[in-house]
Image (cartoon, rainbow, N blue to C red; front, side, top):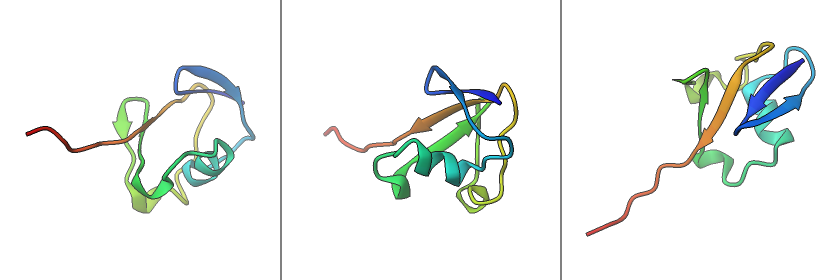
Length: 68
């Protein structure tokens, strides 16, 4: 099936979970990444079970502190 990951179309296996996609995409610092699917944040507790579907749009986001 085809999904969009960080702006790029990707072919992935049917029924892939968020956790599997994080591993497949070799996401840096997977413990600190937030994931949005179709512009809605996924709950970390659901990464292992939430399956992706044809046409989903996935973004990996990192929130960083800083400033003065």
